[in-house]
Length: 186
Image (cartoon, rainbow, N blue to C red; front, side, top):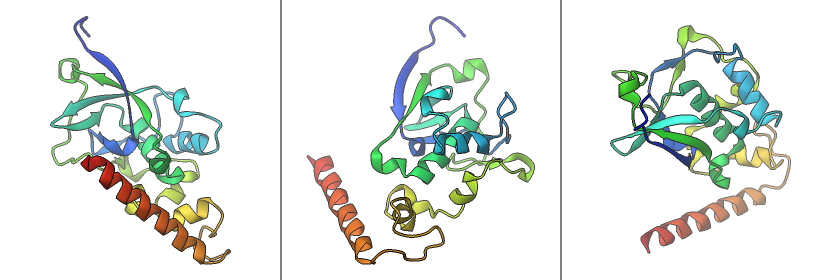
């Protein structure tokens, strides 16, 4: 790594960072299962700031990472806690010398949207099991998962409080979405 290498710090939503590879190992270098790290974040025994900063590079307007396992944890954390609503970001470090370090290897057919775990291994932990049942629209629209998190539905979708609350959440979302469109067009 040369002295000329640029190291800019930013904060990005995990859903705005893309994977550079198609598959990842199910353990970090220290042996911890990636799913256990996700459990720790959700259970608040670890914070985002406790996890090493994700390295990224901008390629044709998209942020890609070298740190695919950490991104897997952060993306799943974003899904399970609906971080996109609260605009929570992860710290990233912009690298301009990925190629010179021979560290970024893009998979030929990888769009960067998702990653699989090598050999079909499980990530470990418990939280990831809840993530797999979340519809992809969770990043941008309200769902029963939101209602679950605020105690209105049980995990299996059984209604436990009056259904009019769902209408209120949907209306709030529409108001916020219209406001974003108006603010962006100014």
